Length: 508
Image 1 (spheres, rainbow, N blue to C red):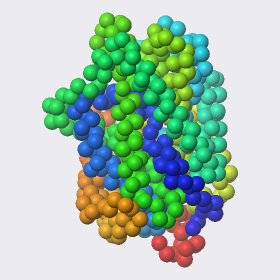
Image 2 (cartoon, rainbow, N blue to C red):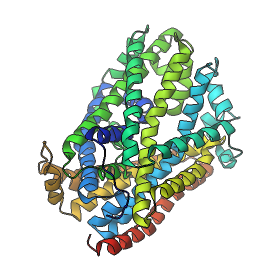
Image 3 (cartoon, rainbow, N blue to C red):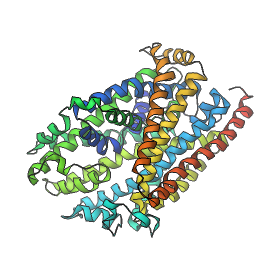
Image 4 (cartoon, one colour):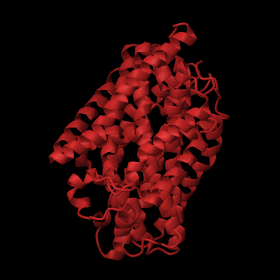
């Protein structure tokens, strides 16, 4: 064991809540409802469940098995399978770290909006308030026509966002201060609070006039959409993205499980809980959208938006017209913060664990090192062009990096390790036993789906590149960070391999 500060989860409940908290994030509230509406409503839900069953949960079981049965963070665990594969674990956690740099910035937005909610500071023009006053985008045409050459005019960071970013990184590091022991206590609040708020918002939303117009818009199935391959791409993408597989998080978390843990049962609970939260979140979102559309005399589709626009523009506009608006605003942005924090500190924990095991650093030093690097890296997202750089990095790291790691992990276990041996180890203490179908899923289904999604994502981004400036910004903001993560991952992988040989006598 390379890490000298090993602690198990205080209870099974703590592990489940931590893993659920990592899986459940902002995407459950502002991404899932939108793509569900965009791709056939109930038809997308069907495709999502199929994707979850045939790829999501098997891959989650795989990561739990690697972490719990082999042991250690993603770099160490992959190195124990074969010392040549440590770099895959490092690539995974580095991609997760890159995501945290902008995820913390979004949390800073949410923290600022939590304060603004007390006075409804956004007024009657939430769009201008968010993009101009909060983010500092002075030319609103950039939102529709793209930033162009101005994307390279970084400018000065917004003080309020920088303060929020510092506070968020302090919160993240305090959450993992003592690893599993701290996380196990924190998640009892950071997971249950957003669930409670979500239930309140669903119940309250369904009582609003016009709410069921929104629900109908959300759930009405277009079964013909199942013939559209883009729908299936969106479904598999959402499963990968939502479960936080491919970032080394679940491997690190599973490494803190006691030896006789039920891996399959845990994976089923976490995977289905994540899906249920996303589904219920859709009710909370579309109920108020239906009410807002009815009040405006327009269709739900005309007020529907995705991503930051939904949370920081559309929702504040709706809050303005709701009874007890400030209270609703506080609850909503508190929910966003508590949803985000679990995902953020889980991504950081995967990176910290790898650093501790490879360089034998104390947790305090590893925590502070990662926090400083993350804070510096996140400053660009507090500038007036931060939103555009965020979109680029998110596109490349979240999708390309995610699918690449999913493909590589399945190949390593499926073809360079005896898959059946892993299945037997997983089944040893699992109530629900895996059949041989799991072997074929890991060897064939997951790699094929991952490589197809990777290729489609690359093609889609190439088609979307319409100018020389956009190509350069994609190179600087997306491709170069991915390449750096890969190169650094390979270099760190060699160090991890040497550390394994030194402390375990070369036994992998």
